[in-house]
Image (cartoon, rainbow, N blue to C red):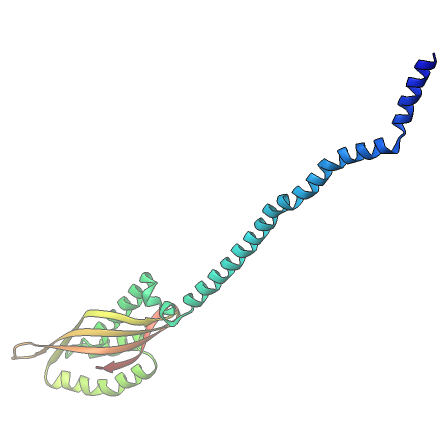
Length: 206
């Protein structure tokens, strides 16, 4: 009995000895220390991920700003370089208009004058009206017929409302009793988009 009691008492005493608790604390503290040491390592991937996201966002913003700057340069603002449909439309409208206003015959000048009012505006219409009176007299007196064909037209600059073109023409002059004469001409043309169609507002020679 005493031996059993003594052993039990010793076990009880050892269970309550502070030294034992320190040993247990030391044993249990070791993995905690390892976990605390490993925490910065586990946080590094997260930190790097955040930094990478910030860097990519900043790079994307810089590229977008650079792209906007390039899109706003004068070269890319010229629709003649980027909009084939709009370029073809203004080329067709201007070519057709020039063919009408520079083609006439002895008995058809009134038709030409009326056509001019439908395709010319501003300075171009004023200049044309001032000169066409002479053309009508020559056409009647000399029995002159003029036929004009646009052989090539190029848009040098195009915006949403204006266009500048370089146009090459072939013109055939016919006088009664004489062989036809062919001549070439080169014009600069400025056109404006009004009410959904292109009007010629200025014509110059080169």
